[in-house]
Length: 318
Image 1: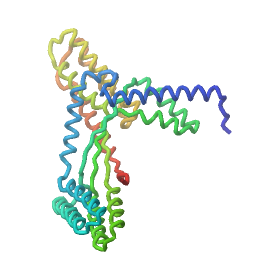
Image 2: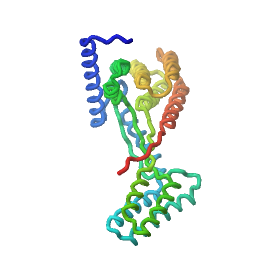
Image 3: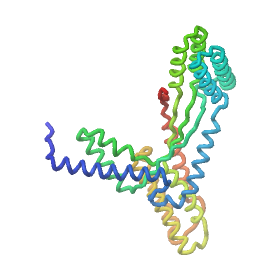
Image 4: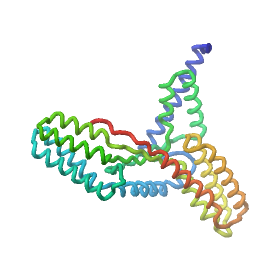
């Protein structure tokens, strides 16, 4: 039987948990409103990261299908018509929905879900690697003691990422559902038809694609370091700048590791590659391609996290 801890020990742990929670949550809130993080290297690549985020979001937005957007708009029109018990207007709107969906299905027969919306959510954690480690340790201790909700309050703030959230219509089931709604409308069962539409709307698929900010920043820091590494006759100031960029890259990767992004076994190799780059560029030595292996490794690593994070869920019922 597990021995119960003295009250003083429990109280001390609770105070520590509250302190860590407050710091993590306040830092996260500040990051979301200011876009600032005091993690090393962040400021050096802020513009590049912002530009890359817009590019990634743009790629996702390019997947939006206008017919699917129109189908959702017509669904909402059908709801308004049903509220007024306007049978013909409701049937017309529903016919437009099925027509738009049929166009998509005919053009893209292999498509299961048609994207209708993309939004970007940024969670920029203001913290240090040591502080995150303390937060994780405290959360683990709380979990060991069965204090799940207290641990949850700490862990919820331990995110440092950009989420590209895609909402899509499940084509086959939505199309069949709309046809079933039309039958209810034809029978003038307006309340049942409204409820059926709301049920359909609750089946919209939401996919969250994660891009860890520390990995993104590490990539951009490496680009800057690569330019300096290839430069012949670097000045002392440039040598120091190159060393700082590589150090900042390592710090960003450590942050990603303690936050649990990706398989931990890869980080050891990342650190080894940085050490090799530092050796090759030490004392003003220069050359091209020093960063190529690490840049490719990080790109593949980030892509794996992105593709592996595509967990779908249904939208909440309105």
